[in-house]
Each structure stands twice: as C-alpha cells, then as structure tokens.
Length: 113
Image 1 (cartoon, one colour):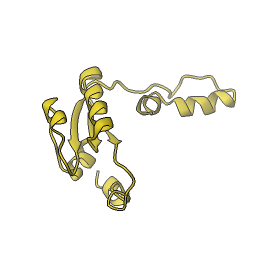
Image 2: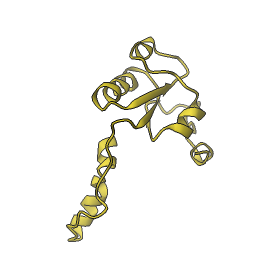
Image 3: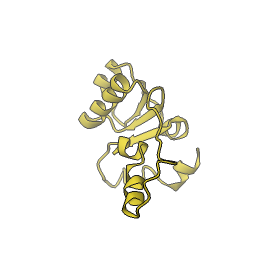
Image 4: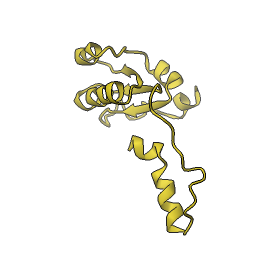
C-alpha cells in the first residue's frame, strides 16, 4: 500500500479509465533517506521497520506502548507519538483497533505538523 500511494497508482488507474494516458504528475518519490515512523512494533510492525530500514534505507523511528527489543536491536530508536507525527515523512500504523487506540491518529495530531 505504501508503494502504491508513493507511485500514485490509484490516481493513474482513474486517469487511464477516463482515457488520459499522460504521465504528467504521476512521478512518485524515492524512499531512500525518508523519515518513516512505525506506530506499533509487534511482529508486523517490526518486520515493516526492518524492510524499510535495510531494504529501502529509510531513517526509521518507532512508537509503541511496549518497546520491542528486536526493534531496538535493529538500531531503530523509540520516540514519542508527537515526535513521530511531526517529524516523519511517512507514517505506518500497525496497531489493533481497540478503545485505547481508536483515535490514536486524529485531526489534532495530524494538524500539529
């Protein structure tokens, strides 16, 4: 999903459906060096962080209520949620929908940036 949004595949699909095959405005961006925040560092979040750090050479930081030693072993620092929301170019959410996490990312946090 992250790469699909980066490469603007949903927009390209809509444009081609309407007969517009122009490539103008369809270029994404390189992931290398981008700051990525991982919210939730369970198994899936940890693997996502590992791929982004080692495979895409992103600057990864993490947030979770319970810090995962495996994530720290990858050299990924834990930051506060506000730090992640204000400094990261990309945010990847890996938490279950529970009452405490329901409004974890809301309008107020997004507008702080």
